[in-house]
Image 1 (cartoon, helix red, strand yellow):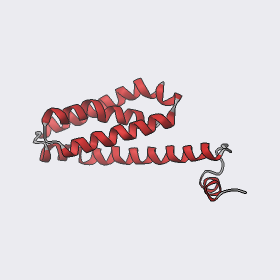
Image 2 (image 1 turned 135 degrees about the horizontal axis):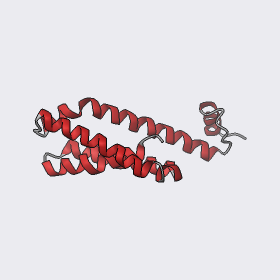
Image 3 (image 1 turned 90 degrees about the vertical axis):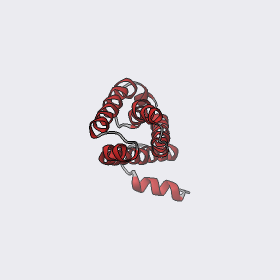
Image 4 (image 1 turned 30 degrees about the vertical axis):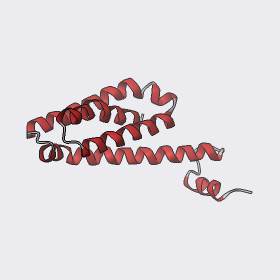
Length: 135
């Protein structure tokens, strides 16, 4: 009577104490989105200053400052969102954070307008990271 999906979830998440298949599926989605967000965060961190310098014309010091501001605002927003909102509804926050981060990174990649890139760097990318960070 078990579906293939239920058997798969039981294999992937065997001992976490969640019996309902829908809840187990949500945990799997949550883990997958956290993995993708963490991967994107670290990938962006590795190429961020080079990308800003070569594509948006930032100097090395401006790109480094933007990198620091993005990281600082991400942790500030995580302190505001992370310990209250994310704990209350983790799956919805992770989904929202993943969507916000993806749209902000895509906008940053496609724009050549300085103020748009700054808005993405200072507001939307940190907010997306904060909602997508593990707490």
